[in-house]
Amino acid sequence: MITVLFFAQLSESAGLREVRLDASETQMSVRDLADKVVVELPKQLALDLFDGTVLVAVNKKRADWDTRVHAGDEVAFLPPVSGG
Image (cartoon, rainbow, N blue to C red; front, side, top):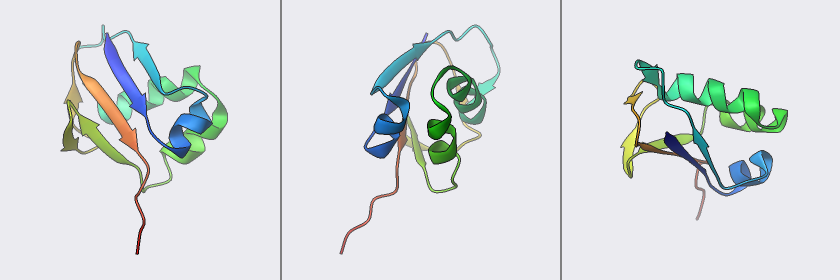
């Protein structure tokens, strides 16, 4: 299983903060995982997740959309942070 975490408005769009997905596919990227997630969750999540600004972390380390994920990994999707 892979644990997927959503933060801030992504959590609101998904209607939950965390989901666990089967990791039976051996060559799955973060992008593949995100594609799998949006099939199972509300459409608004897909719009928010793929808007080009979402940051990704795998096992609490910054990652990119092509990073490979494996069973036991934790993948976090974080919206951009703004401040001033």
